[in-house]
Every structure is written in C-alpha cells, then in structure tokens.
Image 1 (cartoon, helix red, strand yellow):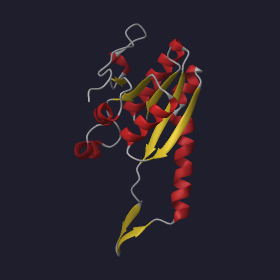
Image 2 (cartoon, helix red, strand yellow):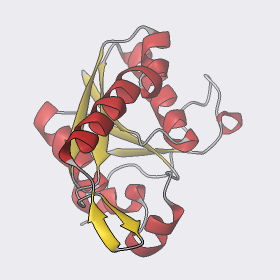
Image 3 (cartoon, one colour):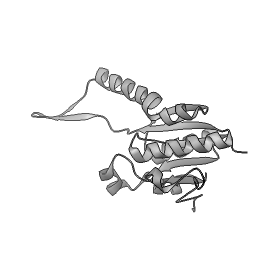
Length: 166
C-alpha cells in the first residue's frame, strides 16, 4: 500500500507540475505527500568593488525565513488545493541527495520530480536532478513532463522513469 510520496520542488514551473501530479496521485491513493526543497550549501557571497564579501548572518536568516514561507505557501499550494495530507522538509544540500535521503527516512513509495528546474546553468555542469536521482535512490522515480497538456486524469501516469539501475 502506498502511504507516502516524496516530491521535490525548487518552485520552478516544471517542479510545480510535479507537485500538482503528486497531489493528484496522493488524492487517488489516499497517501501523504512530503514536499522537499533543498537549499544549496554554498556560503552566500556577493560581489563588490572591493572583491567578494560575505552576507551578514542576519540577512541569511531573513532570506531563509522568506524561503521557508514560500515553500509552505506558494510551493505547497497544489497540495493545499487538493486537500491531501502533506508536510514539508527544507534541508541544506545537493537536491538529488536530499530528496533521496528524505525518501528513505519517511519510507516513501515514490519520488516525484519535474523535468527541469530553475538553474539551467547548474544543470549544464552538474546534470539534472531527475537523472542524478536514478543514481542516488532505489525508490521508484516518477519524472513529470513540463506541461499539463501532456497528461490528463485518465493517463496521469505518463512517466519518464520508474525505478533506477545501479
């Protein structure tokens, strides 16, 4: 029985399609959704005329608070709209590893992600989150196409990847 689904989001349009898909799936299966957002672990720095300078801790804390509010409201909106049980996990680290770790911890039956995220440049150098997840987890992976036009309630299981090969 499927009781828990993990969905990764960075707030991008593609990721939010995945959240909506997970909400639909959870509604049909009467499962809980664990919404996961990974925060990069690089120290924030800004450029100035004098070189690089680090952002004060107060600014970092305030930015983190704003991000947490966005995850719990904006990013979670499809879950709220679907009235499914959900909770959020916001953790520091590399997204594929964080999502896989949360899936293991909560005993998720599926991981759901979108096909693209916010950071095309990062994808160029690091690879996509969905691809990296195939190497990070044994939990079946559902990769949701980037637009709802590709799926309906009838064929909602248009999946790019199921499972992983090691």
